[in-house]
Length: 197
Image (cartoon, rainbow, N blue to C red; front, side):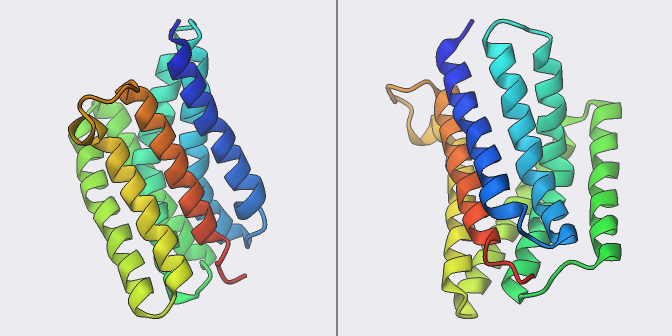
């Protein structure tokens, strides 16, 4: 049992639930679906992470399943939802389903081949794209949206590389990762609330 990891994953789970009910569920269905693919898959991964860290080791497999879902379909949807947000557009049904299909195909490849390099490639493309979209939003005068997107990306980058940034931290790197991803979800939720309905 790793209680600090369970607590930090619980904070991440609760943040994801808060973001969903406070910001996402009010959005138009297709737009909501795009944001949910990212936020709820991370939330589910964190929830099963809590169960795992409390001592039920089979939950690790389920947590990793949702982590891969967030890193593939969730990443595709985050990029598209962010683009629509900055452009002040809503998601069309066909485009939403195409983006989801591409994400799920990528997810299927990762699951069937157990190829983590695909996950890394998707992350290495998606995270900078969302950053560029956020900066573009700032340039277009969408300062609130752009700022929240940029902050969300920065929190994700810090989460991913926290061992490099804080090598002598008093907090465990896994806990730091969970807290920073929670901050990232909150930032993306704050950005999403500006979505045109």
